[in-house]
Every structure is written in structure tokens, then in C-alpha cells.
Image 1 (cartoon, rainbow, N blue to C red):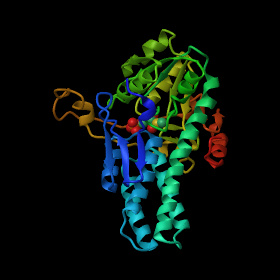
Image 2 (image 1 turned 45 degrees about the vertical axis):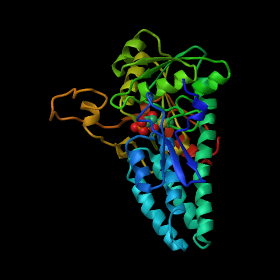
Image 3 (image 1 turned 90 degrees about the vertical axis):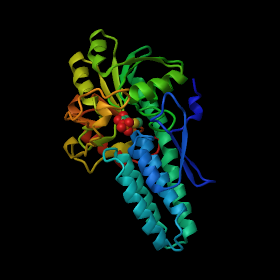
Image 4 (image 1 turned 135 degrees about the vertical axis):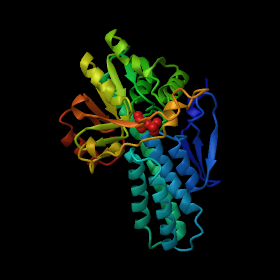
Length: 358
Ligand code: MRU
């Protein structure tokens, strides 16, 4: 098993001016670090899920925007701003649902605009500092999410998770998996069940991989088995991440999440959503306003299979995310604490607080 401490989803090699991305499309079979300089390459890496998970996408976009400016030949700050905005537009169009991407890019732009009357060297330094802060804050926030989420669980509980909201999707502790990692540091263990997460198998390929490497008790399920394990009484909590939380507490997360929430309600199991406040979008009043990414049909019909597994030409619907209605969510855990229904006021206060670890 690999040493997960040394496996980081995304980091900057400042000396060489390159972004290092652990290619998650190859996991668990191959560990390969890709090196990128160009905005187009970084956009493609986000688009094709070589780096994925809302916080990691935000970190990649922050460093990607910095690299565009680091390698820009512009001799003045007007030229730097022009090249930054081109890169920002390109990166922002990589994926539409995770709001962390847009938050990170807006933050970078705000920082750049605040130093436009200085030199290009100072502007570059300011962008490096901002992108590094986005990454550093993420690690602190994930740790705090683990601390705030752990008291919701009792030792030995069966917990079900969906997709991958662990350290491969964010810094070090992940979000939905953060209470599991923080618990393990304290000798508290859980029985974790991971949905394989069709069609891209983030649960099978990534969650199972990282939790096994960490020595956790992990059992893999096909997506259609969740009701069976709930009915047997094996699950006492569902923990999921989020790509965007609307102001009313509706949650966009990996396709299949809302079905789990319905099942959890049926079986009386608490359904917890965990994420940093950078995932809250106060400009989205409800889940109706969240843009849901639709991906290529071949991910459903062909990917992973030796032969096509559906008749050629069949109609396919392949949304990457769904929206879980806020009334199905027991609590939303951020670095600042645990919000219960009604979510609106609590989310507004959390989103307005400084990002820090809470
Ligand atoms: O398409 P993906 O793999 O980027 O989807 C990821 C998820 O849905 C995660 O649950 C979410 O981004 C939270 S990651 C901490």
C-alpha cells in the first residue's frame, strides 16, 4: 500500500514553475504525477478529473491562474491582468458545479486587482501568496471539519459514504472522511462502507484506495446495495461531501447522493453533509439555481469495460451531480461547526465568517 502522507492530489513546484497533479484517472492501478505549465493543460486535467473533488479543483485553479501569470511575458501589470483574465476564463469553464473553482478564481482576481499599481514581480508574488493561502486554509479547514464532525459519531459505528470526499479530493483529511481520519488519530475506529459511485467509480477507485492505505475498516458496495446494508442495520450515519451548498441548504454532490438521502430518511439514519465554507454559495438561493454538469455518454456505456456495455446509439443521461433537498439533510458540518435546520441563517453566518479553521 502506498504512503498516503506523500500522495498529494495537487501541489506547486515553484522552482520549476509547474503544477504537479496526481492523475486520479489512473488510480488505484498506477501512481503517476503529471507536470503542467500551461493553462490549457490544467483546464484539461480538471475537465477530465485527473484532479477532482471540489476543494482540490479550487486549489488547482488557484495555482493554475498563478502559473499563467508566472509564465506571462507581460512587462507591466496591465499585461499581467490581461493574461490572468484569459487564464481565469479558461479555468472557470473546466467544470460548472463545484463553486470552489469560482471562489478560488475570484479570490485570485481580487488579490491581483489590489496590487495593480505595483510591479509585475510584486503582482506575481501576491498571486503566489494567495494561491498558497487557498491551499493552506483548505488543510486547516478539513482538519476542523473532522474535529466538528467527530462528536456526531459513536465509536464503532457503521458509516456509509459516496464518491470520494477524502484526502484525494481536498487537503490531507478530506471533508466527509475527515471525522474518520481524525477519529483514527485518536484510536476511534468506524466501519466504513463506500459506494462504488457509478459511472466514474470514485468510491471504488479512490475512497477504497485511500482508506485502505490509511488502515481503515472499509467495505466496498455497488451503488444499488445501499438499501440492503441500511435494512440490515449496518449503517448508523451517512457522510457525504458537497460541490455546492445553496443558501437554503440544498446540496449539490456526486450523482447518487440524493437517492442515499431518501433511503437514509426511510431507514431513520442521519444524513450529514461535510464541506468547507468555500463550498457555500450564498448567491444560489436554492438547488434549482445550481448548474449541474452533464458528461459524455461513453462514461456510462464504454469506460472501464473491455467491450461496450450498451447498444450503440442508445440514449444516455449522464449528470455528474444531483441536488439533495435541504429537508433530507440532518446537518451540514463546516470548519465553523454543525448547522441544523433551518439552514439559512446558520449558513449565512458561516459563509460570512473568515475562512480560517473556525
Ligand atoms: O466529479 P467529482 O469526482 O469531482 O465529484 C466529487 C464529489 O462529488 C465530492 O463529493 C465533492 O466534490 C466533495 S470533495 C471533498
